[in-house]
Image 1 (cartoon, helix red, strand yellow):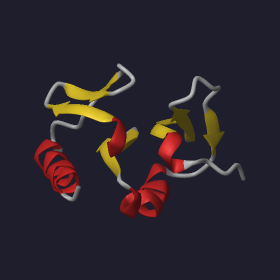
Image 2 (cartoon, helix red, strand yellow):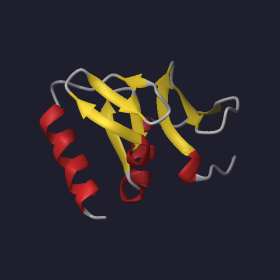
Image 3 (cartoon, rainbow, N blue to C red):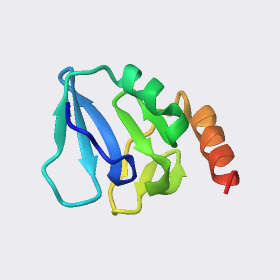
Length: 99
């Protein structure tokens, strides 16, 4: 497997049963055959937040989290699950408050 530096990992997207790892550095996204749930469990303590069925985000890269989406510091906006919004927002606020 490829070792990924978590600090550089902005978000992971699931697409056709593949995970696509998007990094901060402009590099080709890495791909892996793993379930997002498995990855989410592995990265739960590392500051990664499941914001949607298809997205797991590094909270260090979140600039704002609202009902219309999650805006990243790299300027991209990702969809957020409205159904799970309150729980997602709460996890994010708890994580932010740790600093």
